Image 1 (cartoon, rainbow over the protein chains, first blue to last red):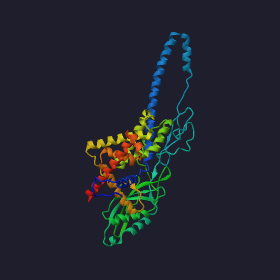
Image 2: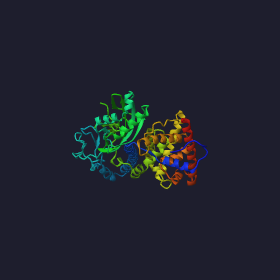
Image 3: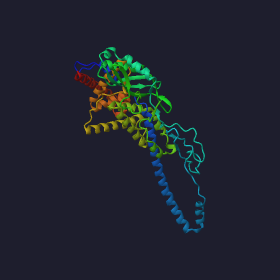
Image 4: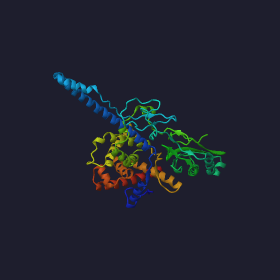
Length: 263
Length: 198
């Protein structure tokens, strides 16, 4: 990747190209749920900003209208003939209400934000029992980014234990040497594992490598979000101990994306 | 399969409180496109300059929040959207590093770099590469801010020299010289840190 030693002042083009290539090859992986989370936050912020703008412009308009009314009323008092015409405007008020979105809580627990279903002027309050307005249906709710997701799970726990046991070096078993390795890896939307890395070493290179080999063979049911399979990082520990191996739940650094391996 | 709440979700009570106007339930179209096209370069730039993924996520969020709030002041005649966003990102990173410096915590260990990976064919090679990436980034962290800046724009955000020039408001030639010098110093830093480990 890069050489060391020799005079530090000396720097040739070959070193430069090598360093340039190595830096270009670094891949920065974004947490898979980060983009949707940030987008949801931005939408919320945008809604807040829009709300602020609307209320500001509404209060400015209200002040303007009030001032105009005062002037008109003052004028009508001075000219009684126009009074009836002016007051007539207020005898048949036009009710204009804006559309609103409705949030309903389904029986299953998660929150579903319904479509902004009301486009006509609202004449009655929403029905609390149905969450709908004036009997309008709230079928086909829009998918919401706020629905719960699911975490990856092992396809077959017993198979996983066997895989780990097979990778436990026999020599270490005979000598009664064990240890615990914490692994971090990417479980893709197809359930395949990628980029397994040692998050916490056992202190023994042989055990670390055995853990890495084992993780390559593990099979997972992928995580889901909005009902679709997504890739995610997962963190878990593998414990090698003479007489039996185990996969245990880690400290939940990635609190919502851990593998519940313990019984 | 067990279900779990997705990280960093808004609380349900907050949801019920916020009932945005239908027109505001989406991002402005231009901003939506920026978010789609430039989130990754901005995140990569920030991640290249700070030690942990969590900090990079927070700073990237700040960048887009600031951009959204000051969308009205963006002038397309003065800069491209990516340049504008990266300028906000640079300021955010500088402010963050300044805060760390004030608290005397500028040195942050890069022991854990799970999101920085190096595609390599075999498992053993990946492990070896991960160590090398870590060593390389530790060396980058020892460089002065201007060198880190230019390397982050080039290798983090993936900008070409001309784009870096636009972001830093210098000539493309000056960028080339800066990159060359930064790489030269990086090589020396790598050798130094490797020597210190022996």
